[in-house]
Amino acid sequence: MKTIGILSVFLLALLMIGAGCTETPTEEPATAVPTTLAPTATETASPTTTPHIDQIPKEKSLAIQVEKDEIFADITVTFNGGDGQYLLDSLHVKTTLSDGQVIEEELGINRGDEIKFDGTKDEDRIEVTAYFVDGTSYRVYDKYVPFR
Image (cartoon, rainbow, N blue to C red; front, side, top):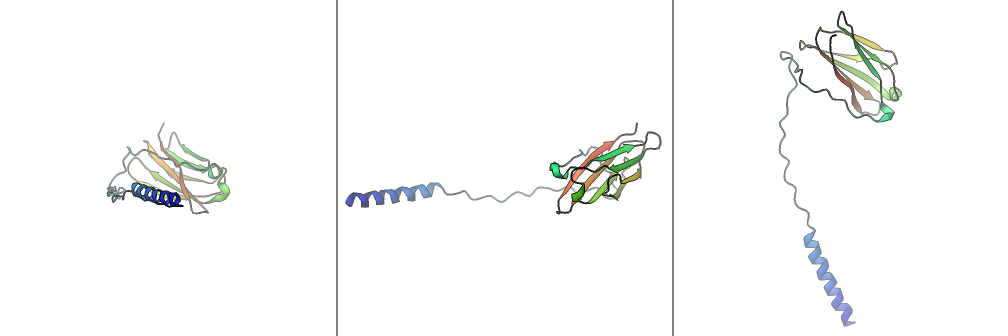
């Protein structure tokens, strides 16, 4: 009996020592990250901004087609459906022209819906953001469209 008591005390001492070694370090406060503001109406958009497309789940994938007229520089954005077309709530198109003008419009969510913009005879940027009925949103298209 006496050995069981000694072993219990020894085991308890080991557990107490081990508990002191597993203490989690305290977190240091996060440092503030400087934010950048979007260009104002008097500023021009920077053509050096890198386009970014979000990683979209396959069940929400969409097909967007963008064409720029080779003579008049008109830009046509067309929705061509996709796996996620029945989950869509809306499509938002933002066009940033090379002269700094920004035009934003809604694109229909039916296959074949399209909108047209007056582009420039330079490189214009087209961004399409999809908003889904479950509250998620993804940037599904973001490219510079050159004039040929």
